[in-house]
Image 1: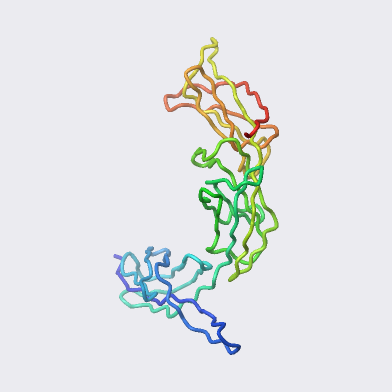
Image 2 (image 1 turned 45 degrees about the vertical axis):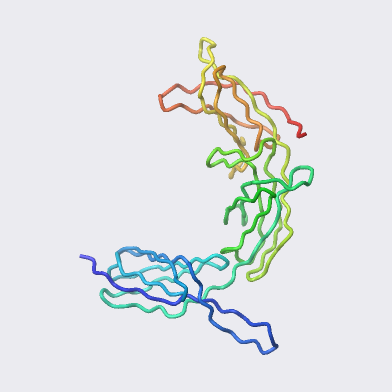
Length: 277
């Protein structure tokens, strides 16, 4: 049987005072930070209170754990190989978090006019570090767990994971070479969207009859991470049209099966460039 124990700690950040040349460091509690404890003998989680403290008293048995602390505006911290004994309180003392870098910017349409909302991805090399949704004026901020380094920012008005379109007619855009420094703000980043291509077509059965409610997906023929791509369902005439998130170029397309188990259909596609007005 696993025995409960108490895990306590004070979560704080070192704040540097710039009031004088002889700066002093003070500990400032961080409220509402997320604390997650995971080990072979159990797991638990908690939020810090106004004093920056937290307690986990359930679901943990004696063993070795990894503790992860995350808070908005700071770099994530991970404590490994933390040994905990059953029925004994483990006081972790002051856990100091370092300030995150902040990246601020705006998503623009092909004419340089702010546009939103848009899905914005923060990438380092080819890895997605974070993602957020810009506001209606295209403004976005990344301010949590952004470490010193060089990043790229990609924006799109179509969210592939949820097949959700925010604005029609735009292709993804990327701003490369964005430099960030922990504890500092990089502002004025602009991501300019492109003009989307348009894919349309018609799905029929072998007798030439239109097939409705077929999901058709378009995606880049060769690309490791696809921010480009779109989808649509066929209407009563078997017709579909996709006019967002399609960068000009060769695409592959596939119709999806409905839950009723319809066969996979061959689709003929037409691709041409749209004109934004």
